[in-house]
Length: 237
Image 1: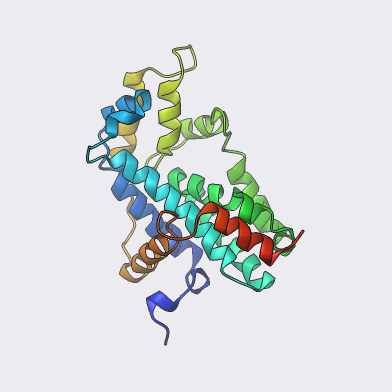
Image 2 (image 1 turned 135 degrees about the vertical axis):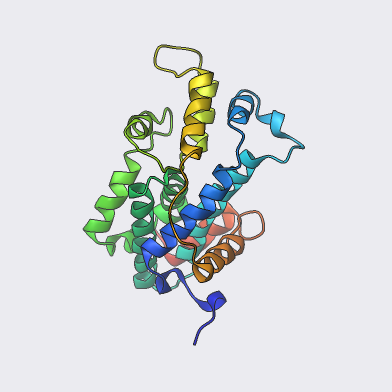
């Protein structure tokens, strides 16, 4: 019988993984001081030397994106890579439908990364249903303004883990009729923090996820250049 450390993403149901990722992200988001979103958005250096939960959330998103890349590229088999991609897409869609938009954005970032995106032979084996689900998530993310994301967020009911980066981008924008005021941003963050998720913790799944996030942490493992080299070796153009 395999241990948690020996298992892969394919050994767990997508919903179970998405639920525990949501609890992990919620725990970070709930600790953010809403007014810090304004301060950090205006001056990213203001968080230097502080016990900064915003940085913790950003680092968590980066780890999730690196996890996607590393977990896909560790397989020599193109069929196995396609299966891992489909599993990540299912997790991403589950996060979207449960309004864990923070993790959804991080997962899409990993799936969109050049080392993964260029795997044409692998993507060719991914089913159309999975591609359609990923498309729904991708359409929410405008890399310049997050306009579609903001539109979707306005229709969301709590609980929700929003993408903190979108708020930081809003704060940096000059005042306008479409940009919410600083106080409105603070109140919206508080609104999301006011309703926790009613999801049961699963110690085994959480342990697996935390192990994966540490294993593929970009700060302690392969860098982007290394992942690009692996990707090119797996599928030469």
